[in-house]
Image 1 (cartoon, rainbow, N blue to C red):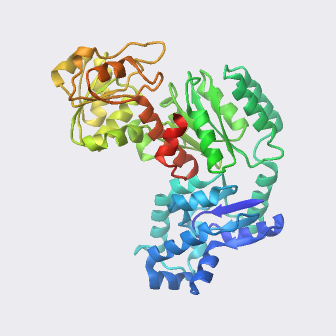
Image 2 (cartoon, rainbow, N blue to C red):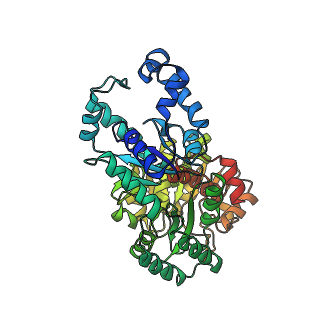
Image 3 (cartoon, rainbow, N blue to C red):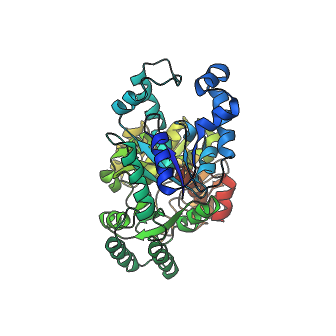
Length: 461
C-alpha cells in the first residue's frame, strides 16, 4: 500500500496517518518532520528565519526525495500549491483528501505553534486559505474523507476500507457495464472498460473518468487522458459515456465509481442542475465542461474558455466577432472579455445573440452584419463544419488576410471555414488547438498535475 494524505491543518493527517500505517503494516512519513530534520529546526523557526518561500523550497526538495513506497505519507497543508509536488506524490500512490469543517479545524489548531500565514485572525485565516486552496485540494485527490466529529481511529479505518474494498458494489458495476455495452461505443473500448471494472476487486483504488456527451464517439479524449494517466503513473482509466440522457450517464458513472467527467455537447448547460459547487468561471459562463465527484458531491468547472483565451492572448484589445449564441459562444465571450476585446455576437436568431450579448456587455446582430464590422478576430462557436452540417458559417469572400480565424470545431481537423481562411491567407487557429489547451487545463483539474503543453499536443497528434 502506498498512500498520501493531503488536507488543511487540523484535518488529522498526522495522527490518522500513523494509525493507518500500523493497520497496513507499512512505514509512516510526515513531510513536515522530514523538513525539520533537513533544516535542523522546527517548522515555526524555518518560517521565522527563511520565510514561507524558504519553507516551500525545502518542502519541494523533501517531496522529490520521498521513498517510492510502500508507505503512508502525511503532507503539509500547502503542498498542493505546487503542481510538481503533486506529480511526485501521485506517481504509483493513492491520494486521500482529509477535510473538516472550519469550526473543527479551529478547535484542533488553536494552540498550535505553527506560524500564521496571514495577518488575519485564526478563523478568518482558516476560511480564506481553505477557499483559496479548495480546488487544488480537490484536484490532487483520489478520494475525499470528512474527519469532522470522527476520531483518528475511525478515519484510519475508513481509509483502510476504501483501499481494500473500494467504493462500489459488484451488482451496480455489472448493471453499468451492461448499459455501456449497448451504448454504441467501439468494441475495443468496451472490452478495455470491462477488463478495468473486473479488476476492481484486486485494485479497489482504481478511479474512473470519462466523457459525457451525445454524440461523443468522435472525441479524442479517451486516448489522450489514458496516455497521460499512464505517463504520470496514476491509477485511473478514462472511458466514454455515449447516451442521449445525462441522468442515465450520471447514474451509470456513479455505479462504477466515477471521479471525473469531461462534459460535452449537449450537456454543458444541463449538467449544472446536478452540480453542488460551481467555480466562478462555470457560474459566469453558464456552462460546465469539467465535473468532479468527491465525498458524495459534484463540483463543476469550465476549462473551455482557457482553450479559447490562450491562443488569442497576443491579440488583446482587438475587434472580434463570435459566430453563434450557445454554450461555446458563452465560453468564447467570457474568454475574449478577459482579453479586453471589443466583441460582437452574431447569430441566425438575433434574440439569442441579444440575450448572450446582454450577459457579457457585448454588441450583437445577425450573420448579415459580419461584413459591416470587419473584425480582426473571428471565432466560430457554432457546430457548422462538423457532421452532419459540413458547411461553413462564412463565405470565402467575407474573409481577408488581416483576420485571425479561430474555428472551435475540431472534427474534422480541416473544416470548410479553416480551408477558406487558409486560402485567403488569414491567420488560422484550428479547433484542435482549443481542444488541446482546454484538455490540458482539464487534466490539471482532474489530477493537480500541470502536463506540458507539447506533451498534450504530441499525444493528440
